[in-house]
Image 1: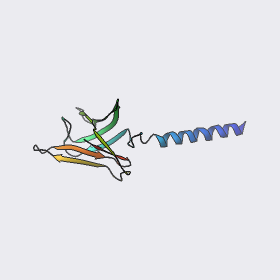
Image 2 (image 1 turned 135 degrees about the horizontal axis):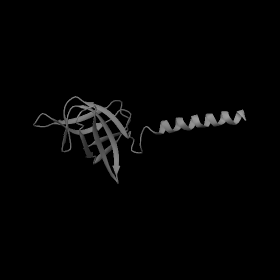
Image 3 (image 1 turned 60 degrees about the horizontal axis):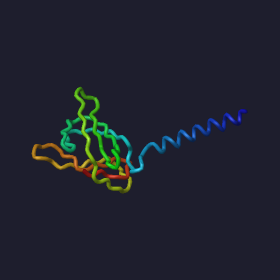
Image 4 (image 1 turned 45 degrees about the vertical axis):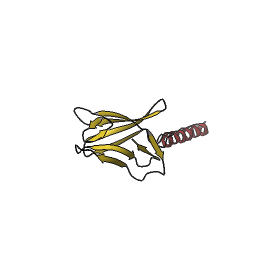
Length: 124
């Protein structure tokens, strides 16, 4: 009886570890959710997001890849959603990267981004 209990506990432990290891990235090679801090206002599509901490979710709407930005820890939470027309597969990133184009109003227009440990770059 004791042997069955040991086998059951070890099996549950191994299953839990497998689930945790598999939960990191989806089939596109990116985590479903990331957090970042913008130190300046950033334009995402048509929406200007104020500086602050954001949660970024990768979602699929049918065959369309959409990034959803939600501000954290603010009295008036800002949100933006942007379709990703191009998701470039590549080696695992060693650090998080955001590529911007500076607009005429001194805002930063988000052009591309890649996250540490992801294997895809998002190009807008």
